[in-house]
Image 1 (cartoon, rainbow, N blue to C red):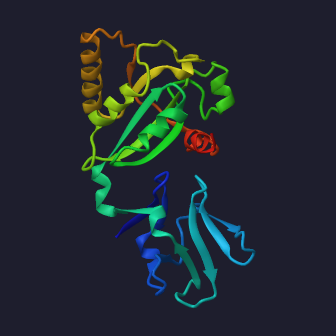
Image 2: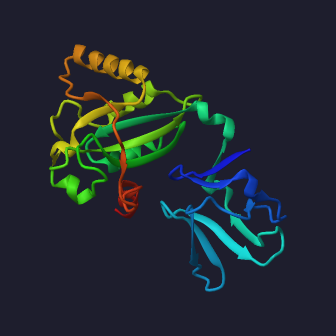
Length: 242
């Protein structure tokens, strides 16, 4: 018993109770988690393609009227597009939130790490509720561009991800990263547990001892506001088309 999630962005797609054996060799489901799947006409003009509504990842095709189940629906899904998370795995999951410049780059590198289930770009640390990207860019909200990472503690740990965070940006640069200047690009760790605070401060201390003047703030995590739908995987898409 558990949930199938999108391997690309980690959001839930299908509960295992929706799964059945259609005999086609591909995972088949007769329902989806509400709002998770988008149906679009296939390029072949005959079938209906299913994609994940959030990130646009291709899942497979949907077929109706075949009579396999009472719902009379079959989502035929490519197994490599999903990952199965058992229901008893909740206690293994932990959330980390890092701000280190433009969230596109941080998202890109964190998604590559073993044990990371999902990476979501968003805004945090400011005073405005549910801000837009344009508002954050105006430098009036107080928010930082950040990523919220869900990871499996049996496959990685917070210290590993925090070390990667310090490696992929310049924690000694104030209110900016390279040419991206402004408070929204500041270096900040938003901790979700007391243990994360200790690890973050330990790593900062080690860097300072080595002569680095680290400016990264360590702050308790307030509300995280997810970014607009067009942001996920933006950096990866840019690299693909360059």
